[in-house]
Length: 245
Ligand SMILES: Nc1ncnc2c1ncn2[C@@H]1O[C@H](COP(=O)(O)OP(=O)(O)OP(=O)(O)O)[C@@H](O)[C@H]1O
Image (cartoon, rainbow, N blue to C red; front, side, top):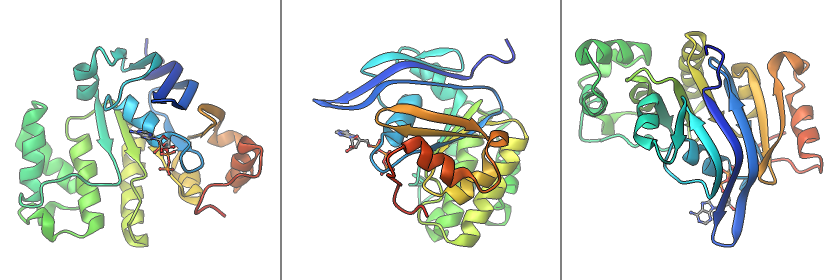
């Protein structure tokens, strides 16, 4: 039971009208893995993550998160997931702690005030707890978005290009939080365009191309600084995503 996959996807197809974006994709994540989901622009990474997050429905295939079937058991899945996109999606006119309180009540977090303090400390915002979120820098907002995503202690954290639009310092702070979450055993799936960054952070690298996961490797199976070569080989046609190289 313990080593059962937290995410299991078989034969996932996603169509938008006549356009087929995912073509029978298979994917499985074990508890504690930190998977970097790579792929060229438009490959379908966001589409795939949205399906895992129960924000979009599969056209075909089996998708299970934490043992629950999507889309049928979406409410149960949402309780076991934390989701962060490149947009923080916070309330600017609420303070940091008010934002967390709002989401914590929605998820029935208990004891809530203690957990809010703990999370604010973890994301380095305890001194800004009572400040309005609209006064925060982009990096601080993104850290609070991660705080919101982990508030209810989810089994799985899904992140869609969380570093987008952040400066170097903000990226490094975000990485420190992700590293800590991962070392605590949180299962993480993150899309990224930044190979150098995920090479350091992740324990596994999956490449989505032509509608399927066309390559997957554990960190220990990739030589040091070898991720770009693995990625290019996975794409197999010299196609390399924007921002890489
Ligand atoms: N709601 C939609 N309706 C129609 N087409 C869509 C919709 N959402 C996504 N697509 C198409 O699906 C394809 C995959 O898009 P998606 O955003 O998932 O790719 P991505 O790998 O996340 O790209 P990027 O790396 O640029 O963010 C694109 O061709 C996109 O135009």
